[in-house]
Length: 245
Image (cartoon, rainbow, N blue to C red):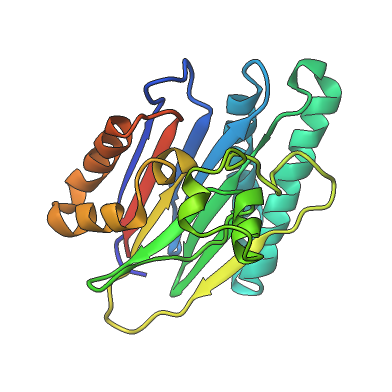
C-alpha cells in the first residue's frame, strides 16, 4: 500500500474538565496501518482509562497476531476487539473504582491492498470524495435505532434527550458483536476517511463537515472542524482522525 497521509487531533471541549476520548495511530511494516478512536464512559476517571486501554489492547493483539492478517483479516480484528473487551471487564473486577467503565471503539485497518473499518458504539467513520460525504459505520445508539424503526426523523437524532445512550460498548458485556466493513478499492483512486467521536457529530452536521473538507487545505481541516464544534457549544470531548490513502 502507498504512503498514508493523516491528521489526528483531540480536544476536551468547552464544558468537560477532562478528556475521555483517546486515539492511536500505528504505522508499521509490511503495509500495516491502524487508526483507532475511542470515547470512554464511566465515573471518576474510568472513561479515560477504558478508552486508552481499549485502543492499546487492540494494537497489542494485532501486533502479536500480525501473521494472521493475511489469512483472515476480519476474524483477527474481531478477536482483537474481544480481547480488549475481556481485558477491560477483568480490570473492573480487580478494581471496583473502575466498575461500569466502557468505551466506544472505532477502527480503520489498512493492510497491503485491503481496508477494513470496525465499529462498536456511536463514534463514526465517513468516506469523503468530490461528490459527497457518506457514513460507513452505523451508530449503536438508542436514537439511531429509533430512527431506523421510523419513530423519529434523522434531524431529531441531534436534539433527542436520549441521544447519548449507546446500545453497544467495549467492557460492558461478555458477548461482543463487532461491525466490520470492507472497503472495495478502485485502482489508482485516493480515498479520504474521517473518523470522529460524537463530540464532533453532535455539534456539526454532515453537510457542514463536507463543506470544511471541500474548502480547506488537507492539514487545516481538523483545526477547522474542532473550531466549528467549539463554536456550536463544544459540550463534549472532540476527537478527529482523518486520512488519505
